[in-house]
Image 1 (cartoon, rainbow, N blue to C red):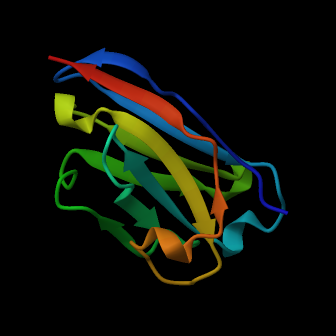
Image 2 (tube, helix red, strand yellow):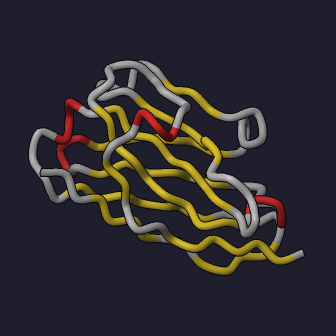
Length: 124
């Protein structure tokens, strides 16, 4: 079973940084592609970043490319999202997700496992 728990969200000023973590309490963590998505009030959930089990393949949305970095530590069953140069438009609930699809995937429908989300608020 896969149980994902996000942490690290909070309130930060524009230009600041945060690091989100997503811990998987289930086993065989390393076989999953992991993704980060976000959802702002009144908007659809959107793709942020994804990383394959080996870390060899990574993808980012254009809106975060160059500012966010996804990484994972399979020994700790944890995936991270380092966010720098944060902007008010990054404000959203951030979710991590897992899938057995072995390639990077930007469609939320392809991820059967989801965490509960963590709020990120960027003030101007």
